Length: 223
Ligand code: ADP
Ligand code: AMP
Image (cartoon, rainbow, N blue to C red):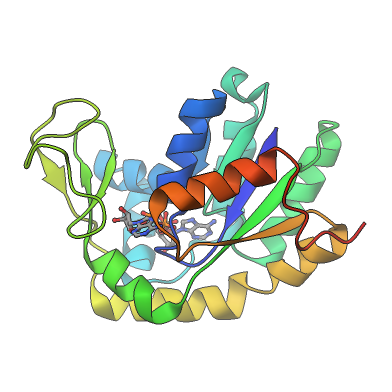
């Protein structure tokens, strides 16, 4: 099963991709996580990407496409993958199509997580993750069961992203609107777009995703 989770920053892509990964045993491929790993490792790519990410702009298509092409070729992707944060431009979508066609693969669903811009600023401002295992939390919407202790791994160190400031969020939302939202009609025309309400509670969004994967949600289909 090959999926794309598409939606603005803060829509809940990472939160749901992690749940899907656990439920279906297919990996979450987050280009944002890959770039943050390069930044943390201090590689040349990381140094270049950090500047772009801190501005809220997009890293070049060439770099991102190369990263994904390599990742999709790894053995754990043999039964499928969940793309989170990729593609983000028409050039990336075209490159993905070519990559999949070359390997005889196709997209099963492109799921748009619809969300209201005003709520996204609050979602992103309150976001933090476990520094040990990457589990995601929110100051208000998703707190650990025991304060200060990660539910998943018991870790006690948490971190916030450098680009989750209010100013950067606004430019990331504008970039989504200008460069990524044109992918919605692109995938709708291909008949693979499904729409879900990303403003619902976290468990409710998971249930909507399950319905899409079970073939119960045909919204946005064009075939
Ligand atoms: P994205 O990967 O799309 O940028 P995240 O999954 O990181 O978004 O979610 C952003 C923040 O909002 C996180 O702190 C997460 O805990 C929280 N969150 C995710 N989904 C929901 C939801 N449906 N309702 C409320 N908060 C949510
Ligand atoms: P994310 O973790 O998906 O919110 O991404 C964080 C930042 O990484 C973005 O604001 C971009 O600067 C960069 N980035 C992540 N994915 C992509 C992509 N597919 N194309 C270009 N830049 C990306």
